[in-house]
Amino acid sequence: MAGGQGASEFASVLRHLRALAGPCAPPAGVGSFEPLYANEREIVVWYSPAREAHAEGEVTIPCARLAAAWARLLAGERLAREALEADGDRPGRALWLLALLAQVPGVRICPDPLALWWEQPAEARIAEAAIAEVPAPAAGRANPPTGKRRARSTADKKAS
Image (cartoon, rainbow, N blue to C red; front, side, top):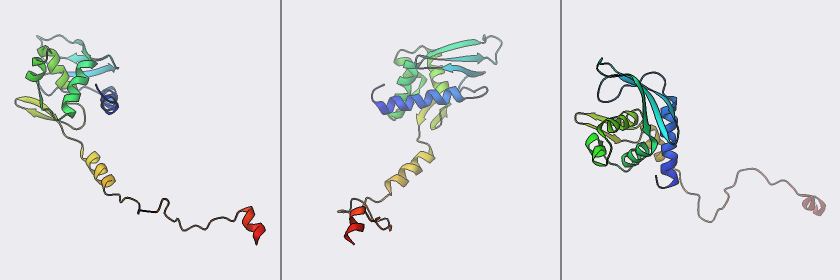
């Protein structure tokens, strides 16, 4: 991931995934998963299938692949399974990337065909708008008056 802001954004994704409590539902497929741990190298989840034909167990997802998918979402790309598979992810991993990213606030899901996109949460848009509306200080005034009088210095007291 290039740039400090992208890296800090992804660090917040990892923090969010670590904080998830209880089973998570993937946006496609059946069953549930619970994140066991997430670090800069990998995310490990426990998969609990809903079908008898599937086996429960740990699934490891490389963070480098998740970070790359996250960067694509932030860049405005609509992320689908096919796009991830075209970039070299096998079908199972592509679904895990989508399942993890779907848990992040601000990620929106289109169920059919399955795709994710990023929409900045409303709270962040409101905060950015409020910051943009703060007026700049008046020209020529480095420090606006505070209404307080300056305390007299020792030199001022001697002069009087």
